[in-house]
Image (tube, rainbow, N blue to C red):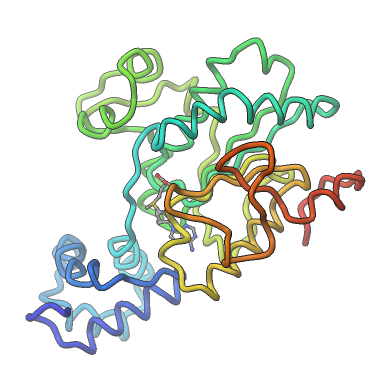
Length: 290
Ligand SMILES: C[S@@+](CC[C@H](N)C(=O)[O-])C[C@H]1O[C@@H](n2cnc3c(N)ncnc32)[C@H](O)[C@@H]1O
C-alpha cells in the first residue's frame, strides 16, 4: 500500500531508481516505509516532500542526492556473528578445509558481498585473528563491499553505538577488539587494518579482489532481487570464486531453483560450492574469471 501523502507516481519512480541502481525490489511491506526512510534525506537537502524529491532527482545533477536517496531505501540490517552457528562451522570445519586446499600457496581471500556497515567482516576478522598462530605466514585478505556509500563509510570507521555493539558480540570480544569512544565503541586499528572496505554494485562491478575468493559471504541480499536478477548475481559470485571455494548464504536463502552455478556442499552443511568444482579441481589457474 502506498503512503497517503505522496503521489503513486513518486513511489513508482523511487522504486525504479532503487531497482536500476542496485537491482533491489521493495516488498509491499517495505514500500510504506519509504517516506519515513527518506525524511532525513529530504531534510538534509531542503526538500519538502516525496514529489519534490522526485522532481529534484529528475532535474538536479547532484550525485549526492541520488546516492543519499538510494542508500536510504536500502535495508542495511546486520549485526555481529549473525547466525552464530554459521560462524562456529566456519571457525572449525570450513577454515580447516580451506587451509588444506590452499596449503601450498598459503593465501586466503574472503569476500563479504553486501557487507552493510561491516559487522559481518569484523566478525570474521576477529575469528581469524583469534586463531593466531594457525595463520602465521599466510596472507589473509578480507574484503567487504556494498553498494551503499553510507554503509561502507561507516564500516571503514568501525564505530558502533552501544546498541549495535551489543548485538551478537560477546563482551570479551568487545573489550578485546574495540575501544570505548565518545559515541560508542570503535574497532581497534589492529582489527580495522585486516579488512578492505569498498563501494561496489555486485551486479555490475568487478569485486576488488586481488585473487579469486575462497570464501564468499552473500547473506540477506539476494532475497531482495527478482529471480532473473538473482541468477545474474549468482553468475557474478561464481566469476569471483576460486574453483574450490565456499559460498555462504543467509538462513532463508538457497541456490535451489535459483541458479545452476552453485550446489549444496556435500561435505559442509549449509554451504555451497561452485557446481563445476569437480571439473575445475584439476585446473591450476587461480585468477578471477573474466
Ligand atoms: C540486509 S543487508 C545484509 C548485511 C549482511 N550481509 C548480513 O547478512 O548481516 C543487505 C546489504 O546488501 C546491500 N546491497 C543491496 N544491493 C546490492 C548490490 N547490488 N550490490 C552490493 N550490495 C548490495 C545493501 O546495501 C545492504 O547493506
